[in-house]
Image 1: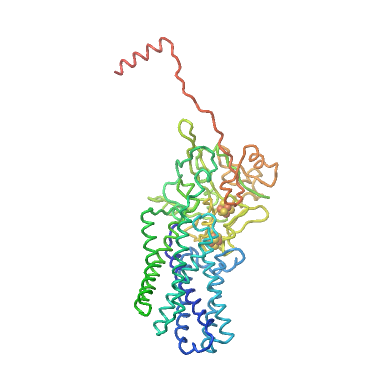
Image 2: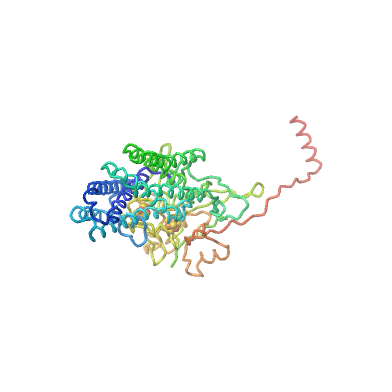
Amino acid sequence: MHPAFSIIFFTITSGLGYGLLFFSGLYVVLDRTGDITESLFSPLVVSSIIGLTLVALGILSSILHLANPKNAWRAFLRFRSSWLSREGVFALLTFPVVFAFIYTIIATETNSVTSKTTAIILMIISLLTVYSTGMIYACLKTIRAWNSPLVPTNYVLLGLLSGALTMFAILNYYNQQSELLLTLIMELLCLAFITKAIYYYFIGKPSELSIKTATGLSSRKVRLLHTGESSKNFLMREFGFDISVKKMLLLRFCSILLMVVMPTLCLITQPASFHFILIAVICNFFGLLLERWLFFAEAKHVVNLYYGREA
Amino acid sequence: MRLGLVIDLDTCVGCHACAISCKEWNTSGTTGSLSDQNPYEKDPTGVFFNRVRSYEIGDYPHNKTVNFPMSCMQCEDAACVTVCPTGASYKRKSDGIVLIDQDKCMGCNLCAWACPYGSRELDRESGTMKKCTLCVDRIYDESLPEIDRQPSCVMTCPSSARHFGDFDDPNSNVSKLTRERNGDGLMNELGYNPTNQYLPPRLANNITIEKKKKNIVGQVKDWANELISR
Ligand code: SF4
Ligand code: SF4
């Protein structure tokens, strides 16, 4: 699949934003005493504002991807069948929820029922939106590399991971240490790495589809004689993206290195240094960019079979 | 009704007339125009509802060319419709035709990703998705003589490789052809339940090339020719 920068940027920033919102909510939910209002007040407000801004940036970038953006508002209309529509509705609902969340932590005690309920709603909607983003791709039977529950799992885990890292940086900036978040980050790093490794194993399995099954021609050999085109058409531009195995392996290695290994090293060696945490966040972000680019570049659409290519 | 096409892979000669007549009809039809970019320059490209590819099956001398026209299969379980967030894509209950409302489409491409047959193409000029309408603006047009109420591609095909009809009617031409010639849909394993059916090419006997024994005069001529060419 052609890796479009607007979609790559959208999935990453919105994942990161929702991760931040999720952990902002988690802090309020876990607070029993109500005294975090003092120490955590500013970091929580800041993290939810940054989270929401990232979500908004993501939505903007995804609208930029549309060929006919004036009809974008219609995307909320098919909630019942379309994951893209569901994602849009959840993303839209995020805005009032975040405003309510910020209002409750400013106006009420963090251990009040209202703030906890809002926080829980915020966490649920964050997870739902990122899950829906993953399902937009996972529901496509035409792209084997995407048609798997591993895809939304990866989206959710990577969104949470990048959000947790950024949350950790914000807390550190406000001189707050959080052992709990650090443990969670370490667990997320492990989980993200494992599911990504399983994903690469899954997409490495040979496909059962071929030019023979696609054309239904039962002869021993079927090969493309002529595409019938004198230059690239829409299908070739959209689906006919190729990368060499060598480049792919190199990029996979770099993405894992930046996304998982570097943050792990930074946080193991210097969990209290803001600079190191910042390096971890930045490395993770660029690792994610590579990971998402590969997610598109490696996925092969079945229509390629009709052009004599693999799918 | 379940309207669709039968495509005869045995008789298609790969002339692309269906693709051209489709473009000609539909560029001024309900989803027109079908824009082109650089039509007279180096890399011409544009929207087509119907594309013809050619394959070779078997190895020489047991080989054969199979020309393969493909357009929207008007699938029964059309994922292109379920993924559409705007409701621009829809499948008509009355005749099974899958259409795109050009006033609602936002050009997100998701339906084109969901279609296994490459039947949907984004028009760069209008920014909307376009696809085969089964000539919905002509098959019901009562001002046309009845014989002309067929899709443009079917009317044009010089080798009668394309047939149009109702698959719900077991006695329709398309149902009969599919039955008699073992027609089948493409990529059924994906579960889209395509309505259009393809008739497999008949495997012809090989043309054997035999050396005919020549008479005495012929043999002398051959010998003389060989001698001269040396
Ligand atoms: S062929 Fe493609 S565009 Fe046509 S109905 Fe099937 S999935 Fe939709
Ligand atoms: S491109 Fe248009 S028709 Fe296709 S899914 Fe998007 S809004 Fe629907």
